Amino acid sequence: MRWIALPKIALGLALAALAALVLIGINEAGYRESSRALEDISEAQRARLALNELLQDVVDAETGQRGYLLTGEVRYREPYDKAVTEVGGNLANLRELYAARPDERARAERLADHVARKLAEMDVSIRLRERGSEDAWKFVLTTDVGREEMNAIRTEANELIAISNRSLMVSQTQISKSLGLARLGIALVALAGLFAFWLYLRQTHALRLAGERQQEALQHERNALEAEVSERTATLAELATHLQNVRETERGFLARELHDELGSLLTAAKLDVARLKSRLADSPDASQRLQHLTELLNSGIALKRRIIEDLRPSSLSNLGLVASLEILGREFAERSGIAVEMALEPVTLDESRQLTIYRMVQECLTNISKYAQASEATIVLKNYDNHVIVEVSDNGQGFDVNSVRPSTHGLAGMRHRVQAANGKLMVASKVGEGTRLSAMLPSPRR
Image (cartoon, rainbow, N blue to C red; front, side):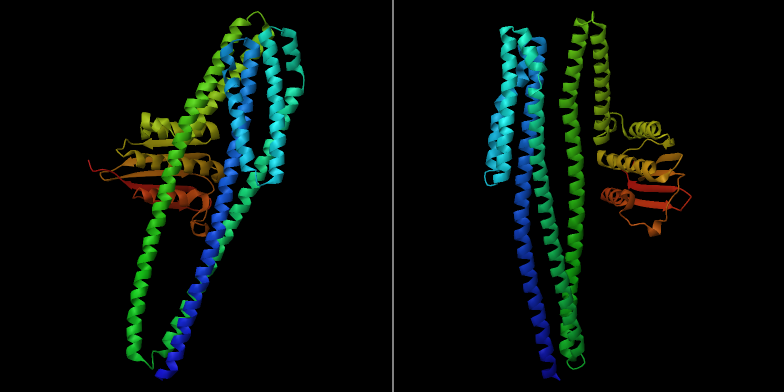
């Protein structure tokens, strides 16, 4: 019996070794393919960045040119002069990036030619303006040369950006394939392990003592595997939390950039329009157009503020959680036409948990607007001795909780965000009876 069992053990070991070699080979191939794909993604991103900067430089140059032509003041030429000095560097970057790609390099050269002609056209008009040739620079400005060159620049740049996007998609597909191969390798190893375990069970009746030792070793490996799985699960949870924090950080950074950069640009434009309006008071048609432009700038400023608030609510740090939720509910009601009733108690929470509650309520209101078909919604915030309860409910069509995937309606994101704050998310809904989401988060003891 012992000699019969030994070939089975050897067969199991051979299968395990073969599966391990296959897994190593698949993982190594996937690693190399993924590395190449990541390099292609990085190169495509650099190309897109250079193209976007080039387009922005041309637009800035055109803006500076128009400002100088209209006003004759040198300070309005600053964007033009700065952009002209930066265009050459961006074109050089593009030539370097496309050095090994003949088709893209040819497009980049055509783009460079169009940019050169556009800059030459702008330089001619500025020189004529400096010489005081009023009719000449106006004639140059009214020709279609500049517009045609600008359209050509956008066309070539957009085509190169599209090529970069296609390269990104191909690289992402390659990474997905590599991950699929890795999954296949893990499945093969798992199947080989199960088959080896079956062989082990077949021999236990002949080798009882050896079987007991093998069982102890298997139990040890199982415990180690469970510990590893728990560790990996905790690592993934930490990674998800980190990515969530990075996202909030990036949103905060983008909000600050919009506030500082775009806000100053729109405000400066508004001030310039006001100055022009005062100088053109005798021209009703110009005043009317400037008034329309002022209204457009005001709309742009309002849109900028709304985007900033969606990215990173300033009211949360300036006014507190309760005031922020009141503003969020009121704006949602005005925007969606859904009546919102709020019962909010003051709470004492750190900034992270306040943001968790705010994002949860924001996501709930978004889902209500998209899916619930509700006419009323309720936001409740209750403060207890050692925890806080937040509830968002509606009288909409509801859904079957048991038949909906956990990732539907953003529930997975909300659940992870609440759990990351050591809280618990609960969902209650029935078809035709509305939906209620409630979260319990710990709070400092009073």
